Length: 147
Image (cartoon, rainbow, N blue to C red; front, side):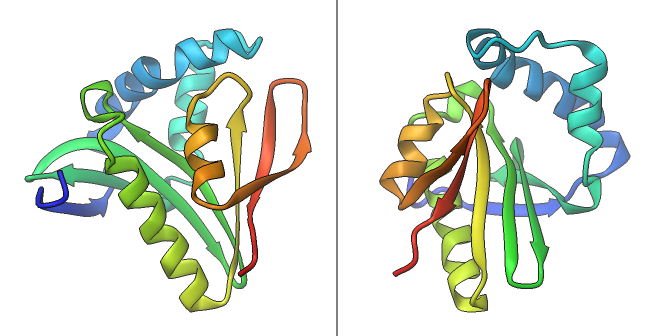
């Protein structure tokens, strides 16, 4: 997987159907397991939230996911990362998150994220240096540990 050509491009309105389907495929199960009832309206709201920051993840030129990083001065937020199920658990998500971490550290920025309680990605984030700073009924907020 390390040699697969990975690239990103700005999301376009034409990508919304792909992104809606991606969110359904990747998040509905975690939402239900976390006590959140997914809906079409919520799915679209989340896809369109901070669409200016939305990047389509391309692997060998094919869309395989979504990345949203909000870079607000020295406060960055990894808002969303979603990969098609066929590309999960193969190291691609870790590569992408590690790249965001490196960029944030070079910029001297803190990095936070929110993750649903039942989302197994939490283990990845912990492995990469994130710690829980607050917990809500359905999700927790994590922050990258300082070096």
